[in-house]
Image: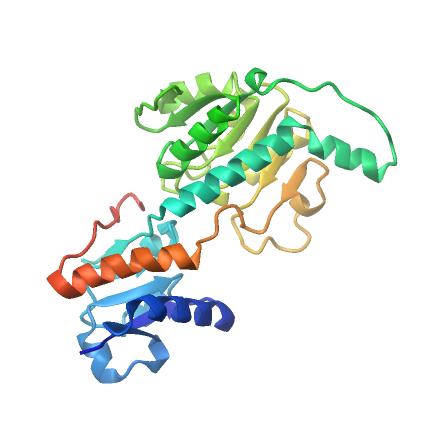
Length: 315
């Protein structure tokens, strides 16, 4: 018998349709994924599993026997915060391809800063022909702030490309061939020698605003910053101040406290900011669907729920 599994999302019609095609392509004939609006009342009453992408919490309440949700995103802190405390388990997407995609983005934008592309872009706008000295990658210390699955992969990719790489995490971690720091004292120590800082940590109550005035001041003068994590990890006012006074040379920002970034925000026109529309590591439907299939089929066959996040920590 084909099981009906609701898909609960606030994504646009085109995005939702693409996911339905990808998911049903791998789960048929064992399960059929339908938008919640297309799921009958009878099926809603018995469903124990939903697939979600930025779901409306009110819609999940329409599934009274829901036990767990499979997220199509790696980041689930918004969902963990929005959903009412309950026994509902949230399973995040852990896709090895996402780590590969993110490490590629980290390398690309690190090279962008290393090769001083923002300066050359400004010179082009001024029709100014001027060469600048180029440092060797080994003379550039890149610090990964966050050493989870994504941070660890990015660190190794940067190291393979010749950069001096170090990492920081809230709790102590070790990475082969990478100098690591932890805790509040470790953060300041790591930032003091950093030429390029890459933010890859999850958003939690402990990391919200972590890169504030004090942390930014601890950066080596003239350092640059990349944020591929979540917008609220950085204090926007503190970053703008550091950019204005030149303590931070340039910031590549892919994530923001409000997305899309509102029109008129200073980041759009700041000469020392590169704005990206949250594209550093998008979920790849082809690989993600296979991972969802594995989790869904295990549950349908055995009743086993995959490892879920710690709701209190948000990841």
